[in-house]
Image (tube, rainbow, N blue to C red; front, side, top):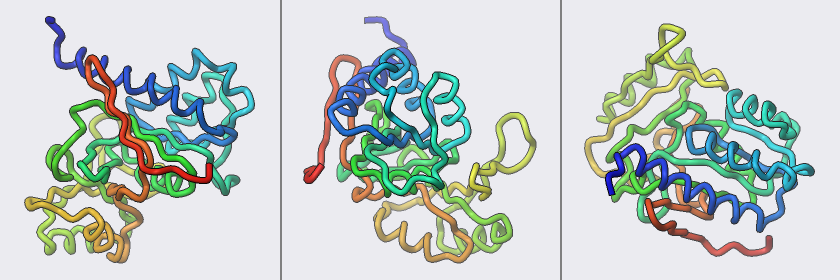
Length: 242
């Protein structure tokens, strides 16, 4: 019907975000975790239209940018260091495989995203259909956050492992490497062969100097909402005792 790809994807994402809002409202939402990225931006815009439903909610966020956006829209924001339990977490993803393993961290916030997801009782991810892949790494690199002092050592080890590492550089603003809000430098890896998400995540985390990886294994996922131009599909794991 004459839609450009960008319009098509935006429409698909919006449908998924609207469905995520309905699902979030069905759960307890005293403390809500929020990730970062374009999907989260869209979700915050939608929440702002229903702000009266979140008057008693508090938010923890995976990036300074997201915290600022929430504050500017009148939501209550907590420092994550003061929170030990999170009712629900909402975020996007860069890739999702058929088993619901994911790549996240395209925005460089992978460490806090994983910390918040691990603490959340319900983990909800919102994507458009272009994020679906057969195997992780098909369309996006896998990000790794590394302690700056270990950058060269970790880079060499990743190269020896055949993972084709590339230190992420800033595209605009500050010249140099991308530094996460948590202080680490981001290395993107480009595996040439099919990966086992669980196994690779363990191997990467075992390297001294690696803070976190952008591999989100299926145990960090409860609900995945996929938007298409005309429909939305929802994949759920069994959720009990909530």
